[in-house]
Image 1 (cartoon, rainbow, N blue to C red):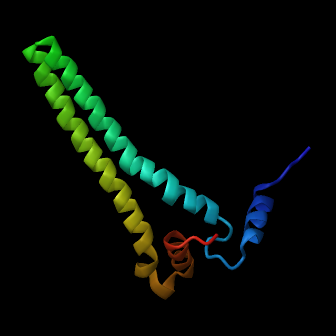
Image 2: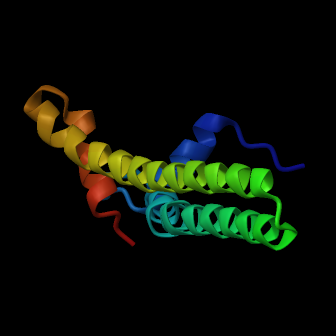
Length: 122
């Protein structure tokens, strides 16, 4: 059957675009930056806030003061979590962008990674 070792897979990826600072991982970096990060940064906070709002709506409809207070607490916590998720993704993006600038010429591998993260080639 078809058997590739890890070294062979890396060599195959290296030949995809040898001039790229990503060494063939451009596709994966683009998926993370353009696909995964926006979903995490926008989608998860929206879901958290909608779920908190639904909990609060159910508590208000039930006319139970204790349930309303608990739902308000949950909504506030979920809003805080939503803000945290939004800023964690932003912070990770910022750190990956800055890592090459801080390292400078002392760590050429980090400089390549920073260039790869900032501008993955097709």
